[in-house]
Length: 194
Ligand code: GTP
Ligand code: MG
Image 1 (cartoon, rainbow, N blue to C red):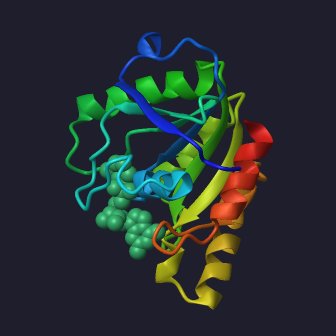
Image 2: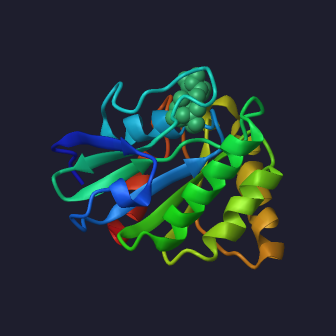
């Protein structure tokens, strides 16, 4: 797939505000700082399209990018950031829960998990939540450039082991926004569902 054009369409906090043009969507979800915005930039070959930051909680809105005038890539706000208030957390859960389960044009959710760590309790909650979503679900390990070859293999096995008791069998991809590893596979899964 050639990325011919990318247009930022807007950042939204409510389902009712989101584009109603019915283009298919691919969403990126994961805890704060896992590398969602960085991976979107790598995927779309744009340096600073989705704003990245060393400070967790950078992406606060649901950001829509129209790609090739044909489909949306959606950057979701991160979760699990310790400094966020309980009220804010509840609001996040409500909005994202709605989005994941009720957005009809949502075709695939890429769930990002840090390749260096075991999926957290919150990662598992998202996995469970995604069982209720009609969208396809692909797990994407991030920051794999920080691991050795052996550790990379272990990271994949670890995610499969987390999912098995939840009754989940999902593809697991190994990526790095830093060196571009896994981008072709990401494009393949995207093309399959979009
Ligand atoms: P929120 O918007 O806060 O939810 O964060 P995010 O998930 O969008 O993370 P973001 O892309 O802003 O990246 C967070 C930090 O991780 C930044 O300092 C990035 O430079 C770094 N980072 C992201 N991807 C990679 C990667 O593949 N490898 C390495 N080494 N660092 C990465
Ligand atoms: Mg972000």
